[in-house]
Image (tube, helix red, strand yellow):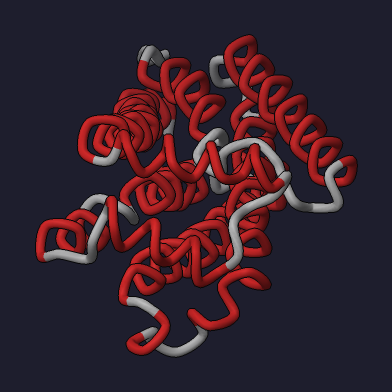
Length: 236
């Protein structure tokens, strides 16, 4: 029995290192999306920001769609980027959390890792809706796909859902890792950063009447911290 237990430790550590790299890749995918936005659509961000400052809020839907269509038209490249790269940050986060849940089967960690998995899955679903709305609004009012006409009601709602569920997923995953005694200091650091970001996002949302908040990809910052901790795990 002792020999068997000794053999499982390296396997478990190796698996956790792979999960850590998944979390790091999720952060990398978020950075890639931001870089694509900055490089390919700099005028779009400038125009939307200028109009938002001028109006005190996001431009009305038809004007917003016109600006999107003018500076970031719905093309084959845009569709490919939306379908292939857009889901990666929260998709990799969900995959990593699922793997962590499988690697920590102890009852003491299952409630945290299980909650993390369901929150990560919810964050991914909400993010896919955000991507769909962002892609669909560029078609113009006469060609909007279903639900895009309710962009103003849905976009912020699902953006907040993706961000908050992503933060809770990281908090619960970090709690599971911490409770398992694996990289406890890094897990605690990721937990604290995720909790602070969540509280700040909630405060900004409430203060603005849910019109503004932190970028929805921000949960991937604490995932980087947790990922680095897991990637450095060594066999016992």
